[in-house]
Amino acid sequence: MERRTFIKGSLGISALTGLAVLTGCGLTGNAATGAENMTIKLIVTESAPYQEPTKIAQKVLESEGWEVQVKYVTDIVQPNLAVANGEYDANYFQHASYLAQFTKDKDIDVETAFYMYGSPGGLYSQKHKTIDELPQGAKIAIPVDPANNGRALALLAKAGVLKVDENKSVIHLSQNDILENPKGISFTEVDQQSLSKTLPDVDAGFLFVRLGAELGLTPQDALLFEEDADALPFICVVAAKPGFAETEKGKALQNAYQSDEVRTWFKEYIDGVLPTPWDRDPVADRKTWDS
Image (cartoon, rainbow, N blue to C red; front, side):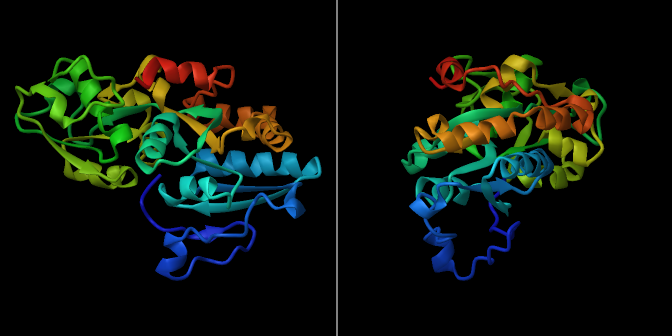
């Protein structure tokens, strides 16, 4: 998920041209027209845990008579706006916490349709082997977006490196909530997709596990790593307009994305480090962390 423009479409949808088109979110025709009842339009981030399961789900759906149109992007702003405007049926690029923050900030009506995979993260370093080796005045890169900003801070607080306001949940935690910082650590806020590129220039950086994997890093290499409970708000989701999940189209999409073939793909990706908590209830979960 990152703040760049769309780059290509899988079914020959022409590239966006002109700022007015991008701002107006004029990506395709309306996905809700009657002629498209058997067409599912998806907007998906161009990254393996999103792209590969989508390709599998597309084959499953097409074998059932659906036409599936997918737009692959490298953008974390337009996909929710495009779904809210009815230009796409659903998107798959974000975790639940990001969705909650984005819809609140933009005042749009998009919600979790169903879960896909857990997206844990950790604090990694190419200069230090343990958290105790962090020097005085260490520089740490953390995600700039509010939904992910506090994750590294929470990990450092649990490790005793920082003291933070314990009344703040991880999804609301920020640098403003640091109460004690005895090592004088400085934090650099970076676009999340750029964190792996920044890692060589800092003492440590927070990375999603899939971004760490792109550098050949595993959770075992992390100085600190999120536990399952910490990662709960950060389960990646397929999102759509309210009520979509209960429609025939929504149910077909969920069955395809949560098929045995997709589960097998996740088990084989990075040795199965990304969980698929499909038996969890997103609505019940949100009550535990979004307060």
